[in-house]
Structure formats: C-alpha cells, structure tokens
Image (tube, rainbow over all chains, first blue to last red; front, top):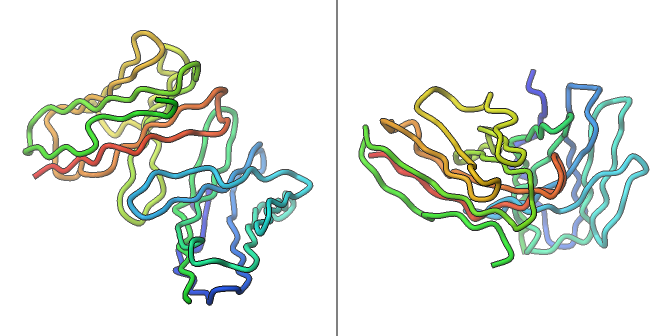
Amino acid sequence: RKEVEQDPGPFNVPEGATVAFNCTYSNSASQSFFWYRQDCRKEPKLLMSVYSSGNEDGRFTAQLNRASQYISLLIRDSKLSDSATYLCVVTLNYQLIWGAGTKLIIKP
Amino acid sequence: GAGVSQTPSNKVTEKGKYVELRCDPISGHTALYWYRQSLGQGPEFLIYFQGTGAADDSGLPNDRFFAVRPEGSVSTLKIQRTERGDSAVYLCASSLVPAGELFFGEGSRLTVL
C-alpha cells in the first residue's frame, strides 16, 4: 500500500459544478497536511494547508479526517482555470510524502 | 529574484555524461529539498538539506547521484554517468522551516539521449 494515495482521475467536470476528491494516508502519526496545485509543465504551488478543524479559502474547502486517515478538497463553482493536477502532501517530522496527484479538467 | 531559481531550465545530454543542476533557494530558507518528477507522477524525494548538511539522502537512487550545499544556500545536484532512466524534471524547493510550506523552482528538465 502506498503511503499517500490519490485517485489519478482525470475528473472531467462542467464549469460551475462542485467537485471533491480525497487523499488517504497510511501513517497515523502524520502531522501536517497540504494541498498543492500543479499546472501542466509547471512546478507545484501551495493551494492550502489542511487544519484539523477544516478550513475554507474562497471556493476551496479542505478537511481532515484523522480517524479514517484521509484529507479532502472540495471546489465549488468550478472555473476553467481550476484545471490542474492537485497533489496532497503529508508530513511526518521533516519528511514530506507526496501523492501522485489527481487530474482535474473543467469543461466549458 | 525573490523565488527559487534553478539552472539550467533544460539540459539535453548523452548517456554516460556528467551533469550538474543548480538551485538557488529563497534567501533565509534553511531547508532545501531536491525532488524529481516524471510525467503523471508526484514528486519523488531525493535529498533534504538542513543548512549545509544533508539531513536525509535516502531518496538518492544510487551512488551516481550526489548533492552539496557547501554554504547553506545554493545547492548543486550532481549526476555521474547519466542513464536514459535519469530523464525527468528535477525540482528544487526551499522552506523557512523543515516540512513547512515549500516554494519550488521551475525545475530543470533533464533529457538523456
């Protein structure tokens, strides 16, 4: 079992729809959680950190479920510009463990 | 500049040659990471520096790969006797604190013919 797993997709979603995807992790001692966004042939960039209480940033909501060991990302009112690969990152001490990413395609 | 800078952005080399990839992190960032990424995959960890020392080099695939950070700032990833399987985008990232928010460079795309 991989340490961090994501559905690779692609998720094909019409513009304006709501989309959600999860990321599961295997080590219950994992400490911090992040979502990064990566555009095609670009470097990853931090989208948002994931806090235990859940957090929201505009159209984006991230949640952490420690009991079931997954984090989620919800995107509301999706835009064409949201098309990208979304990578989750889990940290344990100084180590960052990356998922392979979920590809999202927003269609007009 | 304010961001992480990597050079060269593209490198094409022949099998068996030696390659150096350079990373200039954000000023003041003590943590520096090297990753490599192949198409459709997440970043694969190579090595992590805290200051000048390699705190974790467990991701280096074999002894052809080596990295240094002599003054705790700029880092160089060195690949000897390159193989076609080394072709990938090599990403460097720095953070203010270990395992904090990572700021990535644009990567060095290495192609080994």
